[in-house]
Amino acid sequence: MKRGLPQDPMLAELVTMARKHQISRRTALAGIGGTAAALTLASCAPAEEGLTPAADMSDTEKVITWHNWPAYMDEDDDGNYPTLERFQEQSGITVDYRIEIDDNDTWYAKVKDQLELGQDIGADIACPTGWMASRLQGLGYLQTFDNGNMPNKVANLASSYLGSADDPDRIYSIPWQAGFAGIGYNKAVYKEITGKDAPGSVADLWAAELKGRVGLLSEMRDSVGIVLMSQGVDITSSSSLTEDSFMVAIEEIKAQIDSGQIFNVRGNSYLDDLATGNIVASTAWSGDITVLNYEAGTDDEPEPFGFVFPDSGATLWADVFITPMGATHKRNAEELINYYYDPVNAAELALWVNYITPVVGAQDVAASEDPELAENQLIFPNADTLAKSAAFRSLTGQEEQRFSSAWQNLLLGA
Figure 1 (cartoon, one colour):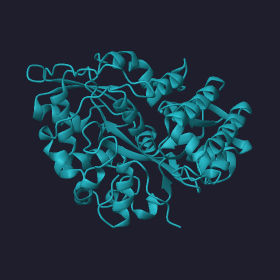
Figure 2 (cartoon, helix red, strand yellow; figure 1 turned 180 degrees about the vertical axis):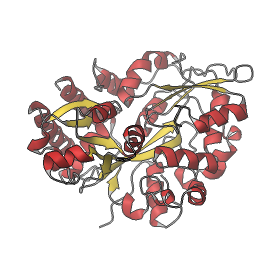
Figure 3 (tube, rainbow, N blue to C red; figure 1 turned 90 degrees about the vertical axis):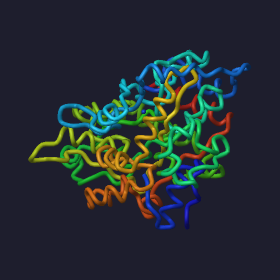
Figure 4 (spheres, rainbow, N blue to C red; figure 1 turned 120 degrees about the vertical axis):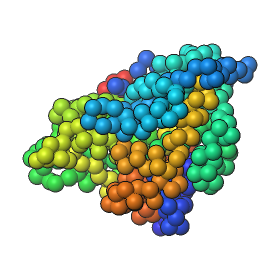
């Protein structure tokens, strides 16, 4: 039976286009200190008075500060970012690229006070996940982008990505990259401990041999989503993903934390635990494992780490560009977005980070550069691959508060 389309229009487009055989496209503990509670309360209480966008200083100040996630930019052996360096050379704009987002909730906790006041958060542009961007938009914290400054975005973002109820023209949040959450693991150690070549299910993470050596992403929609799917829940459906089913998944995770099966719950820093051997397997983001292999691989073992979809399916998500109200270099940011919507630049980035690019034409460019990588299902997924994934459905305000509070309470006790 064919699964329904995700509610997020960008993710729905991924599935729709793959089904039509068109070009395919491609989170430290969260919630500590009341972050989740603050998020959910804020989501119901936008500022009474609208905020005013900061004056744009782009004419006289050729700079951008960018908040992004780890392992989300092409990098050479010297630690430089080739596509970003080329943008700076071509545009004359200096980019202060900061790896500030470990997960959505902890990043929001750092910037929420400034956001509420419309002040500069220290970033002209940031790439949170779509659900967080939608929340910030609803609170009135985001500036609108000017399509006139981004002809590549207009030309190369498929029209069917548009039309969402909260951002029909994609002027508040513009797709950056998308990806899957599944299971990452140390190949040699996993096989040595369990006798299996690779984990195949969520149940494999709970194997006795892995006690104390399992990690869990602090991004609720991914970790809880994966567990829900393993319990037969359709996370795209409100009739299947209910509060009751969500709490059953929370109880399973709690049991694994209380028993010592789970070593810790972290954002992107879970990669450090995999690299150091603190954990052997973890819920993980697809492109991260490619970067980990790049950093840890040797001539004898170029890919010591693996990534798999659980047999019950992976989660699908998307991160987006946003510009907060207090940002003072919006037009510079638009020039950056326009640059990354050039298929040549998008393809170069995608082939390195191994995430799904939203840029039409990037796969054709990739095919001319590296035909094998252009068929990589983690970068350019086809309909069969997308059918093995699902996007966590949109939550009502009440659900958001209850689900996030339950997740926060779980993490506080971890």
